[in-house]
Amino acid sequence: MSTKDKIERFRGGQKLITNNRARSGVELGLGIKKPVRSISGVTPLTVVLAPKKCSHGTCIYCPGGEHVPQSYTDKSPAIMRAMKLKYDPYEQVKVRLNVLKLMKHPTDKIEIIILGGTFLQYPKNYKYNFIKKIFDALNNKDSKNLEEAKKINEKAKHRCVAMCIENRPDNCADKDIKEMLKFGCTRVEIGVQMPDDELYRKTNRGHNVQDVVEATERLKNAGFKLGYHIMPGLPGSDKEKDLKLFKKIFKDEKFRPDQLKIYPCQIIEDSPLAKTYKLIKYTPYNEKETKEILIKMMKIIPDYCRVMRMMREFPKEKLIKGTEKLDLRKDIEEEFRNKGLKIREIRMREIGFNKKTLDLNAKIKIIEYQASNGKEYFLEFINKEDILFGLLRLRIFDKTAIIRELHVYGQALNLGEEGAESQHIGLGKKLMQKAEEIAKENGFNKLKIISGVGVREYYKKLGYKLDDDRVYMIKKL
Image (cartoon, rainbow, N blue to C red; front, side):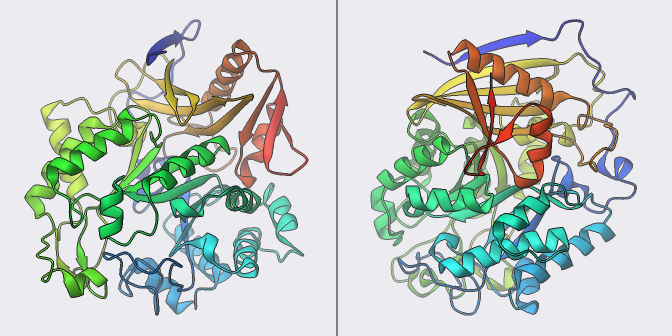
């Protein structure tokens, strides 16, 4: 069945904003510093792993791995903070919570982001202790084991509502996925760079395109929200090839990720490429070329995908060759807005990044598309100007219906705080109701959802119960 858009208006309509204009994070958050950190509805908190080289070796563009985590430098802010704390996850969480509070960000809904190498390749005891310490720090209480720590966090002051683990496509076997689910992970990012076996060979990636295809399907079937790391400008590629491969990511049903981080290749100090780029006569894209290809890529991205980041924030003193301008995204988005170009990508349509009058009726738009041997229903809560207030991802495959993501956008608010833009005014509940209707229409009498530990109480109020394996929330329809 071809992609189909359905529009359903709620009976009688609904006013989303009571005041006559959208308020910025500073106005909503009582002086929030850097409001963009929590403007998408949750407050991210990064925890960095101790240094460990990837088991396959080192990709040619990748620094680090001995004294600092793989793919990072000792001048990166997050790494410098972690180094001072000897990479202790408990201390990292505690310090960051205090900083976020000082910056006036809400800290009751936290998304934990684990950075620095391939977490699934670390020793078992290290992994479980690392996750347990994260929850202990959020809970401000030491627990007996990981399960107890997660249980406490369900009602803690600082709840882990989402958890992201960076991973490799060849580390997504069933056993790896079970482990990530056990940790409370809800989002996985895998390094895809560009789906081409020749480029993988030239850059020493250590996996192939089929690994990406299989990992993509397994992760979606497990309910994870899936992000790809994309890297245009690799040695052996060019702008034409990059664009062709990028189009394939969304044209081919075997891929179609939910999110992207687009990091053009650069030559970084201490990377294998830094030693060989002259020998292989490699030159990364300059600023003009980088901007041109990023603009073309943004125009391709469909409604259901969000670009999380553009450009790796490598310190200038570590950059040997490549684009120095790190805020290219800002220039590109301003250009799109000034020219009135319609970009479908999620972040440009979020309420937090659109300061327009929003006193409009609400509606749900549903996009259906095939992906990874399953059917995806992408539900958007939008106004007539296509500004996005919330979304839900429902996946149906084999004999399973699973919600992979529920997210309401807008400046993050504390639990129980009255909604000012789109948070805490019932949009999530309406999206859930619609997803349940779709599941029933497809013949399902049960719906499950992957849930951050700190969101379980919310789903319990909607009639969901934790399954016997203490992983998914399930409801009989």
